[in-house]
Image (tube, rainbow, N blue to C red; front, side, top):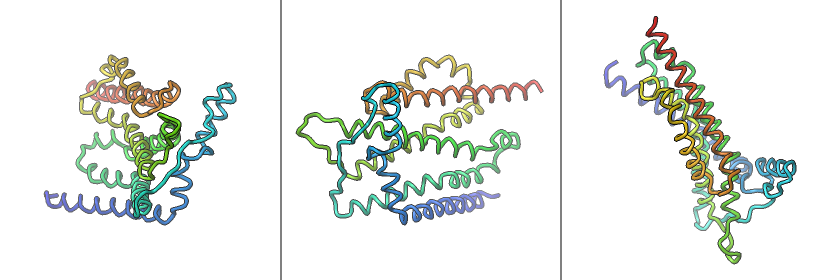
Length: 264
């Protein structure tokens, strides 16, 4: 195709992707009770699944401090259009998350024809793997990182006379940023796959700097979790380290494939 034909094709891929986001945004907007009461505001209540699991773990380990029995804050909206704006914003984010596999598939449909046959074979299942890693990260951020962070920030006080009355937009932005950050962070194996194929990363390099990577992972987990306790930071650091080891395996597989082609 000519350059203009490529632009026309890209335009329709973008239109279909945006349309999918809008459709799911409308669905999320209509289902306001489920979206906010069950999903968004779930981590703000002590009966949330994560808090109940921590209480069960606290009982087994005889560590009562692990059990979260209450969250010391209330949510409020301080502007006239605050709740409506929040409703629109959260509905859009929900639509983006749900439509992510289709949007990526549309992007992939545009990119794939430009690949060589061997590159197409090597990247089979890319949409499925990217989507799986993305939703795994979303679930990790929602059920692990966000509850721990919200609990710490909600119960942190500089003085007993100061009460925590959070604006709804502050709560939503904290939750959304952490969940989306985890969804993107869990794309590490796919990023390593691409960098390994173009020769920038090798498994030897990643194994050599494994100790440095562990330090970076611990720093990242400390930044992502405002809670200073080691238990919360390890809950975040362990999955990220697992992703790093998985990335080494992916890079090694790519290197073996290259060697096999060279020897053939």
